[in-house]
Length: 210
Image (cartoon, rainbow, N blue to C red; front, side):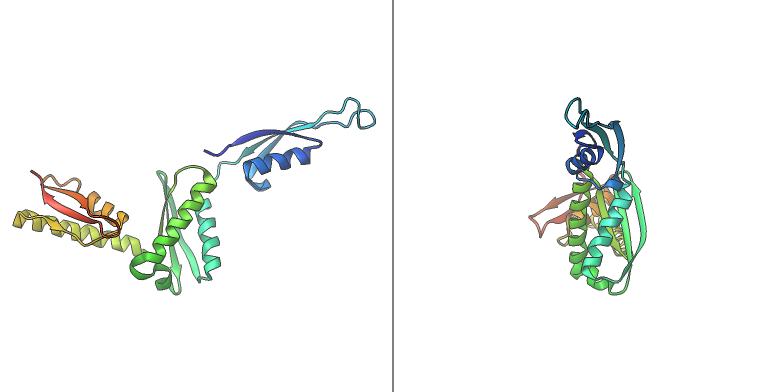
């Protein structure tokens, strides 16, 4: 976790505040400041002088707002014409959906560009906050539709396994896609799922429970 509160001394209040901001890695608008000691120059600026002392505390930032700012910063650098459609934060996860022109470019081949942007933005938000936040970045509900499609496929294949009594090996998928399949079938009392192979060719196997 990042340091949340520091106390700093300086020749004056401004100098003490600046030292605190540098240690916290924050801007003025990201902190709350309490002046503990104004400080004094003393007689002739020498005798009896006291340093200024301040207590500076990092404000509790909204993870959704942090994520939004980081995504906007990255998309502006990419010169993408976009709009933030929705930002939803719950239980340590922030889900952002983007809409706009040329969204196909942002998704990339099989979602590769979107996955890369999500990974980079996730690193940035966790470095900024000093805590684990899971970021899910979507474009025109691409991931949501993909999730629904994978869930439907997993259910169909599980029925095939039950009918044929034979295992089904799905095509290679990303870890996020594999998680969707595992979750979709975890409550089924008749089948079990597991992953096999090495990245990027790791696959999900659907099998009958023994």
